[in-house]
Image (cartoon, rainbow over all chains, first blue to last red; front, side):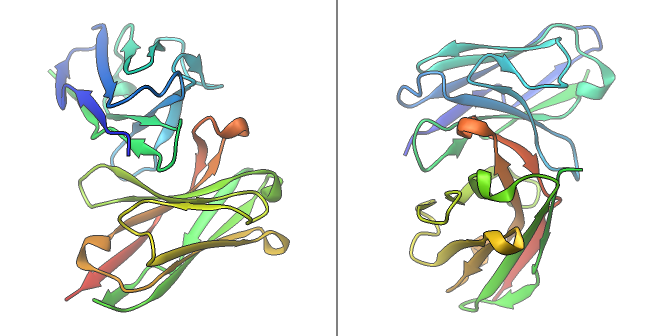
Length: 107
Length: 119
C-alpha cells in the first residue's frame, strides 16, 4: 500500500498568514492526488484534485502543487473559515490512502 | 440537489454483522464509482472500499478484505456495505462518497452513519 505522510500534524497561524502543508507519498503517485478540508462534525470537502486543479466553487486562495512523491497545499491568505483539518489522498492505485491530517488552528 | 444519505449504523457485538445503506439522489447514480470511507472518532480518514458503476469490480482496504462486501442496486440508486465478523476497531463513522468523473477523488459525501462494535 502507498503510505501518505503529512506535515506538520498541527499548524498554528493567524488570519492573513500564508500557510503551506506538505504531503509525501511512499512511492510515486504521479499527479493522482487530492486535498480535502474537514470541519468538526462535517464530512470532508474536496479542494484540489490531480494535485493542482481547483475544485469548482473553492476559493482561489487555495492552491496545490507537486508530482511524484511530494506535494503541497498552500492557502495564500488564511481566512477565519479556513481553520479546519486538511487531508491529502492518493488515488493512483487501490487501496486509496489518506494522510493522517493537518489541523490548522488559530494562533 | 446532489445528496447521499447513509443509514444502518447501530451498536453491535464483536463478531456480529451489519449492513449499511447509502441512498443517492440528484445525479445519475449508475454513471459513477462509489466509495465507503470511515473515520474513528477524533481521528483520521480511512478509505474502506469502492465499487464500479456496474458493480462488476470492487476493491477493499486490507483491514476489511474478506469481512466486508460492497454492492449496489442501480435501480434503487443505492449503495450497500455488508459488514461481517465485526471487530472493535471497526467502530467508526462510515461515509459513502461519490467519485469525481475519471475518479479524481471524491466530490460528494454523505453525513455518515455511526457503527459501534462493543465487546
